[in-house]
Image (cartoon, rainbow, N blue to C red; front, side):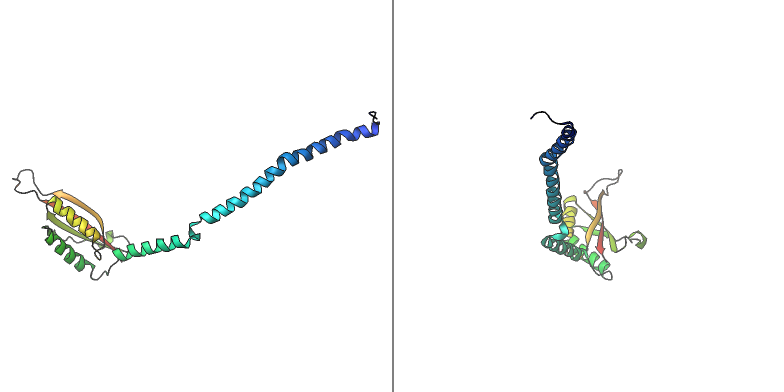
Length: 174
């Protein structure tokens, strides 16, 4: 019974190789391929769920916030200069700050789609900070693009009162 004929012995080795390949496929490759398919499926679902454009509530909130910001800083270019100067002068007068100058701003230096206005104010440090804080909350005058606070005291004169100069640039969306 253990004796195999020469014809049967030559088929044993290929049979064992085929059996071992099938066993390896069952134990390793089949599960790996199945895990790979599941991974691709889950990755596609996660990518679809993580897509921001797929979340309509997020887009609605984002668009309403952007609309609110644009409405806050948008204005009429015809009346912008007069409105800004008038509103800031009234605000500055209530905080004991005076408007000392309205320099002309060159149109070449303005970014496209924006209009800017420069102003110079003079007062105490805390009064100037109050004006900056109120300007930030004031609607219709645009946004504060930049400001700088400088001392008006010269190094040879007698300092009678601490006066500072605020140079501010207001910008609005056309």
